[in-house]
Length: 268
Image 1 (cartoon, helix red, strand yellow):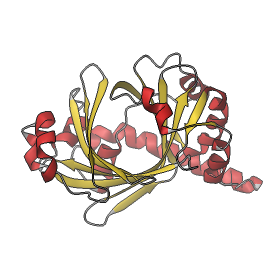
Image 2: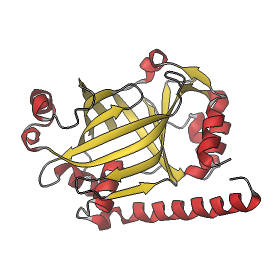
Image 3: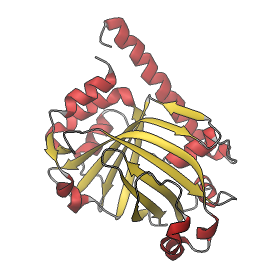
């Protein structure tokens, strides 16, 4: 059984929760903690946390495809905020939840105290280039940059969402990650998984955090947007992201080394 099939099988064993059941932990103002690791670790991680979390289920599905278009200014203000380590920074994106077609224009702002605030406006499904029609919403949040925003890169990934049975906490796990730009260039990272603990409190008491620690996975900042811009769009200041690229390469080596071992054993 390959890793993706194994993930799908393990998810069947989780107690389900619907959209109405996660409303209380859908924080728009929160603390986010991210973790990067090999997607090959996902089956073991899910087994380890199964008794502590429920899995989001919509129309009998527990794995969900997302598509995102990121926007930036002509001088790449938001990208540069991230790669230069600016504490107050912004992302603007249009995200489509492909399971139900819901589409939102989202402004994600991180404060110098490490808290993330997300504002969003529901849009028509399939309309991925409607910044102009949302000018008032954007001007309230990011004026004067609102008028100059253009789409710069697309991302796609699969997401699992877990909700704690014990505390106010939500976990997202993204994998099958890929990027493409407006020129037709693309990049995929099937070996990479990104977990994020979303909570209004410290993660130190989180069972998910404890299991990641057991697996040797440490928290690290990571932006799909900045990574895609650097690697696919050849955006400037790539040296600022070099530690992340080295980590990604180590994860890639681990994934394919273990994948080869699985195949030798006949597991994959």
